[in-house]
Length: 368
Image (cartoon, rainbow, N blue to C red):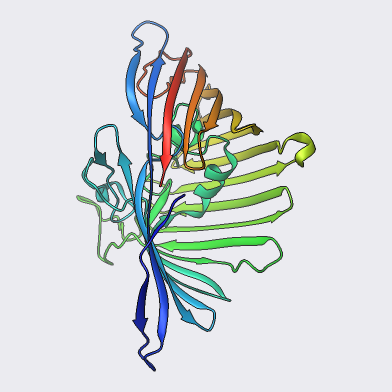
């Protein structure tokens, strides 16, 4: 990723010594032509120019200042882009549905933090990824980009994209372990819903002062080709707390096996009287200047007293061809199968319960 650095010098308050700083402008622009279709009576097909099929489109600024003594201060401001229409994404002010911003308005919805780092680790303040999101992003071969191959657990789950804290939390205080722990890593987070102490639901005497309060943690170990991590998170709501726990693992084999990377994730969540479970397995295989990747995911809802548990399965395979270190073209095909009343479909399509949805996508991604 090419970096545009602006060198700056600032005088320290103590003695006027100079500290070196830098600011980096960075981003991704990703666009794709997508065709998705459903099946059965009342189904719908769609052709569209999408964005973020390989990586989420974004624009950001980040900077770091060396404070001396092993300490550094930094900031990170990053917004999501819908480059097919020139619009942005809303943020969320209080980790609740009531705090969702205006769709299409540019905002630093992806990350907005200031932090202090040193031998002790890093303390980070602002809007940031929740710990449980990292396993979904890292251990899915397709990541969580908006393409048709992306994680079905993330896009249709109780604690996924649609949940206020499914990806990020506002008003958060986070701590990251230092990198010098022999392969062990981890983070903890506390985020505030910022309701006052007398806040109650309209027409009731039920207090909602803890609505949007999120706590989460993630701990893992990485050494050689092995990477394994467990994460959990809880967001308090009067209507029922959202709880998410996942375990992810991957192993990258040596060059004799062409750096084949196998990945997996186990996922469990609950909200109110509904539980859900998911599992994903996949691989990434470098081939010359490109990479083949594939995944299979299965997601099952377990509503209270349900006779049948709606279940969705998704198979996706894709190829990414790197034209340079920053530019790539890609293609993906995917298919979703439903049973027990489930009716999940690929983006833009509508399918009948217990039927399938399929799609194909071709796109281009450029990083800067």
